[in-house]
Structures are given as structure tokens and as C-alpha cells.
Image (tube, helix red, strand yellow):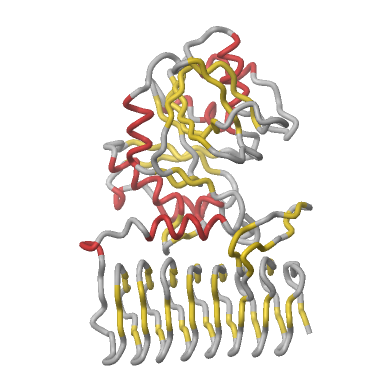
Length: 391
């Protein structure tokens, strides 16, 4: 998820102007779950300062620190002292609907109940096999397609799981995986069950996955949630499900078509077009004759006039000059972590605190790191490392 996790935990990366973890907390609250323990580690203060004790979210939130990222089994074991009965475990960086949570908690039985869903491409996921409602095998990132049932990382455990975690062997990734613990429990004839869900569950593994997650969240905005600022000038048009934050100004001639969200203290236009599935953060300025569509613009971005940002992500506190264009391709091939990926309809990924001159084109699928400077008139044809100066 770099460059967006260089300065914050993945769970705090924003979609639709809220951290991913906040949507998880909200789903738990909607299910009547009011007592949550967050296992924190990397950049933990970002999480703790935002959620505090949980009062503003209608629940009690406590924290356990995992000093080293030694895996999910290790993280769960650290929370043992705060658990006395059957408990729910989920990842803080996966979007999940209240319905999916209710499906696994409502069907919980035996020693372990896990939630799984169907996915055509299972590469990079844990995979489960079943007989009826019994889980017969769980394999983390198998080399072959043994099943199309993928593990969502959502479980209901009895405290018996704590007895088996200490026997979990370290994985090739150098971590103690809870999936290995569960496989051990299967082999020892514990009662391990699976529940299938087709409700919303989205795993954002790569930066471009944030666009799908952003679109999914915006699609849930209901008509009664729509808020229009009273600072919409004459001849500006706002259509569909659009949330506009406090003190934001929509200048004359601008056109906004939802679903979309615009944060607080933003200035849009004049003559700006914002099309569906776009999130505009707090304190963003978008100058005249610029178009944004299906994109995620984080807080405090300045986007110059006569620009086009499509199917792209722009990190916070980035300043972009006029006539900026993110090229888009029906099939982009971003190169990340030594691997070539194939992504439909992707523009650009731009990290935070970048500075761009005027008349810049970024080719489809290119990733620009944090704190980069790009001089005017440049075409970006390859990924740009963090702290680069492109002339």
C-alpha cells in the first residue's frame, strides 16, 4: 500500500474522507458490539489519537501494543488478558458490512467459525476447503488453486484458541499466522466451521484497490445522508448523492455529479467538473476548468486549472500546477514490489507532499512516491522513487 503507508498505518488510509478502520468500527457499532480492543503497533499514535477511548463512536475502545509485527496469531495472543469468553476477530484494514459481521456472529458454533467468500483469482489470499459447514483445510497463500473460497480474516473464537497459539510455528514470512493456528486446530479435531458471505467485504491490498473501496463506500450514501452546503454559487450544479462539508465553496459554472464527497474548507471552481465516485478531502482547492472523475484526492491538495485527474489517487498536501493530466488506459500495468500487475482503468498513484509544475503528463499506471518534485513540461513514463527531483 505504499506510498500511503509510509507515514500512517494501512488502517488509517482514508477512503471517502474517513480512515478505513472507522468503517470497521462503524460496522461493529451497527451490530451492537460496544467493546473493542485494537491491537496497534506501527505508527500506533495515529490510531490512538484518532479513536481515543471510543466515546464519539458509541463504544469502549482499549488498546494493546504489538511492539513487533510478528503476525496475526501473536497479535491475538497479546489481547488474551482482555478476553473471557467467545470473541470476534477482524482486520482493521478491510472494509466489511454489518451484514457480513452478523452472518459470522449469528452462525458461530464450535471452537472456531471463520467467514469466507468466493473469489476467482485467489493469488495472495488464504484459501479454505470445506465439507458442508466444516472447514477441512486452511492454507495461507497456496501455490495452486485448491479452492476459490478465500479466507476474509474474520473469525469467532472460543478462548480455547489461546491454548493452541503458543504451538504455532513461525511462517516463511517470519510471522506467527492465525491461519496456521486454525490448521493445527483442524488437525487436532477441534470443531472449525465456515460461513459463506456474499455481503460486502473488500480487501485493499494495493494502492489502486483504494479506488474500488472508495467507489463502494460512496455507492452506499443514501438520499437522506446527502448534504448540500449553502455556499453553492449561482449557476453551479450539484446532482445525485453528494456530501459537501462545512465552509466549502462551489464556484459558479461548476458541475458535480454524485455519488461524491467534498470535505470541509474546500474551494471548487469556478467551472470545475467532478464526476461520480470521487472523494475530495478537507482543505482541497481545485482551480477552474479542471475535471476529476473516479478519483481520491486527499486532504490539503491544490490542483491547478485545466487539469484532468481520472482513476487516480493524489496524496495529502500535494500541490499540482495547471494543465496536469493523468493518462488512463483500459489496461494499465503498474510495476510494484518487483511484480508487474494488470489493472483495469487505472490512472496514476501520487504520494503525499509532492510538488508539480505546469504541463505535466503522468502515464497510466505510474506510481510517484512521497516528497517528490517534478518540473514543468515533464512526462512521467516510469515510477518515481520517494524524495526524487525530476527535471
